[in-house]
Amino acid sequence: MIPHKKRIAVIMGTRPEAIKMSPVVHALKKRSGALETLVISTGQHRQMLDQVLSLFHITPDVDMHIMQPDQTLADLTARVLVDSRKVFAEIKPDLLLVQGDTTTVFAAALAAFYFRIRVGHVEAGLRSHDLYNPFPEELNRRLTSTVTDLYFPPTLLARNNLLQEGMRLEQAVVTGNTVIDALYSLLNRPYSLADSPLKDIPFEGHRVLLVTSHRRESLGEDLAHTCEAIKDLVGRFPDLLVVYPVHLNPNVRGTVYELLANVPRVHLLDPLDYLNFINLMQRSYVILTDSGGVQEEAPSLHKPLLVIRRVTERPEAFEAGLSRVIGNARENIVSEVSRLLTDKEAYQAMSTGANPYGDGHASERIAKAVVNWARKKPALLSEDAQFKPRYIPKRLHAGRPLI
Ligand code: UD1
Ligand code: UDP
Image 1 (cartoon, rainbow, N blue to C red):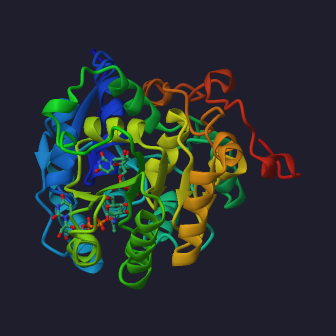
Image 2: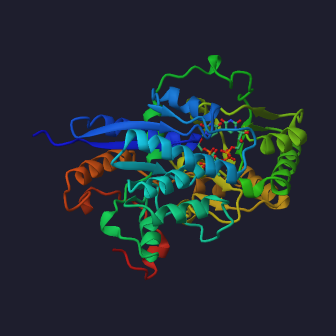
Image 3: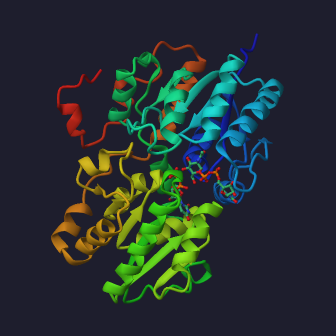
């Protein structure tokens, strides 16, 4: 009798999930002899998700069309939970793969738990240890961990966080972050600046400060402080050009366009597709962001990174000296960016170093582990084959067990 192929459902809803799950989908589909792979989109983000999926040539098998303008967290959670029930009842996956920390991730994982569908969590174990920062992502991650069967922490630090919470880590593989796979897969794609949305930006003779900011906990005052700091900086440095692709969340756009539209040398753009965004990162001098994914990508492009958050669940880059977590105070943002624009040594120190987040092989590790799980192998992936960064976080040296 031909054994039943395990059916793997990969669910995604937002831009970062699509970027980080696309290489995983391709790696799973390469193993079609062992697995059947289906893609579910909740459509939590409509335009920003579709931008990524078309770039990676992925067409979801199911689209739940969840997004509503200015959606509240409660409504969003309820819609994903209820509608996942209908989808799971129909396609009956053996394993649901979720990625990261969004409401799609938590609500879909909970729905899978109710159906007794196994859950695999890609990018498991990141913790800021502050429930309100990032909000609601820290809670989404913690809740997802409790219903997870297969853990895919990207780094040793993430694995250690899970260990300290008492998770069953015989079902864990340290993978590296799949965002580095996505980044590498596009770095050599042909690109024409002249045909791009960046074509009117006068890069020549300017240094570019790339800005992204969209976190819910920063909406309102903190985001306004960031915008005021940007105005101060272009006033202070005549060769500075600020390029800010603005997230489609209306609460972000309202503040940013009110304070920065028509400021000379500040270019506000619509969200860029990932290929254009990578090119913009490469052309930038310094990156100022509250994004999770951008924190992980910047070290691969050797760009100094300033994180406009109070805490981060991705401390590896600052522990390696490649980023600084600077909060949201206007004066602080101005002084930290100014330092990098004027102090060559400080700049140099933050722009060299190996990426602590990944090596471009994370998706392969995940796909191999899923096949091993499907074949009921005792180990998901040998210790040797797991991700080993060249840099080991200091806090792991500092006496915490590395199992
Ligand atoms: C979501 C995630 C956050 C992630 C971020 C990545 C949650 C609670 N938040 O935040 O973890 O870091 O995505 O970008 O899951 N909108 C559009 N078109 C789009 C996308 C968004 O119009 O393609 C607008 C809609 O009005 C929507 C609003 O943005 O209601 C907010 O979107 P939502 O997914 O609820 O939260 P984000 O702030 O984008
Ligand atoms: N990104 C993009 N276009 C943009 C801004 C960001 O493709 O205009 C990419 C970025 O390179 C990263 C991801 O989107 O891979 C991060 O998404 P976001 O900041 O929305 O979410 P977070 O990572 O904070 O959850």
